[in-house]
Amino acid sequence: MIDATTILRIRPGFRLQWEDAQQAHILLYPEGMVKLNPSAAAILLRCDGLRSIDDIVVELKTEFPDVSDLANDVYEFLAVAIEKGWVDSER
Image: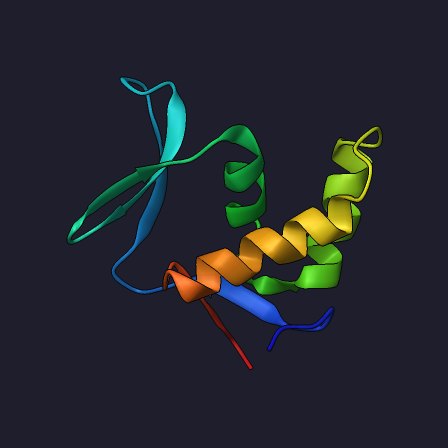
């Protein structure tokens, strides 16, 4: 269960990086890779083990002020990222 104070980080064994050939951020892991859309990359780049989900939402609202229901989108994406094992909680 995640809430506004949850702090997430990319799991060990995974690496988030920009890939010129893909012209996108990708998440590399031993079994393969995932090409991320810009929204997913913006969220995962902030999963650094320092920021809470609330911090991430506040930063993204500043960067993308015209996006409606941004907080809900962030929570939904992070729930999927946790389920897929891309990130884990620092708590």
